[in-house]
Image (tube, rainbow, N blue to C red; front, side):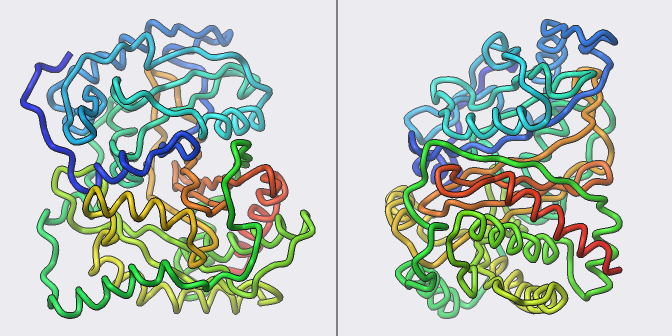
Length: 421
């Protein structure tokens, strides 16, 4: 494995993701996928788990694959990365079969409440028989301290694919030094962002409350090129289209459960920052007021596009959220997040690999991201482009809302937006 090296302190952003991890709100993200036949998956469906472990062990030991260093490190005293040899018999495991794609989604939902041990490198790869008739599924779990969405995609590409190195995304190519801003403007904006958490902008709704242990997950995917073309025609982006469809999903879930729909759903939307250095996390946050109710799709999409144009630039300029820049600030943030009435839903979207990946020779046919629910927000949507598809996941508190209902509405609205081009 990798040679031992000096311990490295966690960045403030990475450390905050350790601090806010809790037994009832596990701070991990998942990539759930369906594999094809090839490599460690034989034509008859037989799984050679030892071949998979040996293949990935070689990649983890390759000093050229620097993006994988965190997969051979554990967190020591919540403040330092310590190099160690991962036990791949534990990190890479074969689990019990599931019943098709819905069964894979249900397993992903259950795993969102299972902590990753801090005395090991904070990741695991589970091979899941039964996810498709021909081949198994897989679930890769990574702690958020290791990587955010942008860095996580890079880790996945380097762990799985043996082809040429993927091109660095813009946020990893850019300078590690944040752009200079006037201190007065930065202070005022930062103070406003902190104070906003005390605002009661969201009326009483089941979208907010103590997040239960029973989670629901649903997978959706649409053609990426067609969605992008439709968004451009409307003067919007793919992310704007996702936000518009997220409203339809939340509305459908609320109505099916007999709950009222707020007129506006303020969404917390991560924005990749153009400065990260060695940190696995470099994310700003923009808040987008999503119009709900009887707003027509075209009008909703136009209003969202107008809001995100300015909000995205401001989020990148302001940088990471102020309270997550220190350990004590992160503890305060976690306490406030469980009581806030400023955000109603989480929506996140990352650019994934354009070409299909292989896992020890087995093609990764489909892939969906699953991101955590945190604070008191019970409804989240995550998306990733992958090999020509736009893959979207609903993750919610199944004690109050139905993920299958939300997933159907999400897929229908994305299809409706696509058909508008």
